[in-house]
Image (cartoon, rainbow, N blue to C red):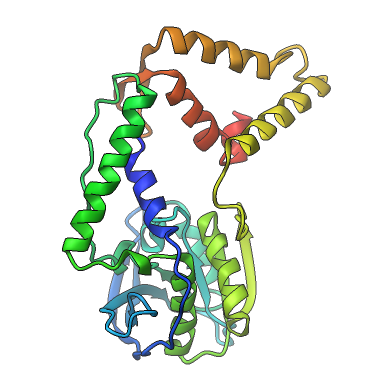
Length: 315
């Protein structure tokens, strides 16, 4: 299924938990860790692990191992640690550093320790078996009714699988995630940390600021997502498209090229609703692929891919 994995991870992380008990805090265990960057760069790092309850509202909750990788600072007078929070939800900080952002992480070592923090259920902090949903062929245009039915079935299947594994899904919330960050700060033995966050990571950072303001020194946020902004309703997407349409019309450099973006989008939607298309394309890795495009497929691309990041929209 083209979107099922994305929706299932979002579903799990947004389940609501309302009661919190004190954490049974464990100390951090550390070990040497050789980290390899995106161009084969090797860095002598440290891997740290500490334990938190999966669900703090359940006295019998199992314990989770939360892991992170630290790039030690090169400064003689280091500032407070920088903790990187990946987006998603579901992104891995240790995975992010395998890509070009690795260079920036290394530069920040000149200021302080840089901690690649894998949130619960991600990267080195994940002990949950992957759930395999429907394996639809991307070359076949999606049918909205079939798509929704398949996603619902996939979610039910995955919930059943995870519960059978002993996973308490009520523990996979932003609030629990924020409490984990506070426990990280305590386990490290520091009074405050600096948070560098992107996308969902900023949503987590805001939650940490709400529930544990005492632990935060400074925050640097990119693609900010406020505490009430995680769910993107269609009306908000429509308003953004209308705003972009107006900007294009008012800009002399684009007015002739894009005289009616909104009208063009509506026209394409109408055509795809009647006659879905199958096209040849290139994957992100440059591989030749065949992709089916229906109205719902294009709606997803516009709302999630193009509008999620200004750099995609500008192209």
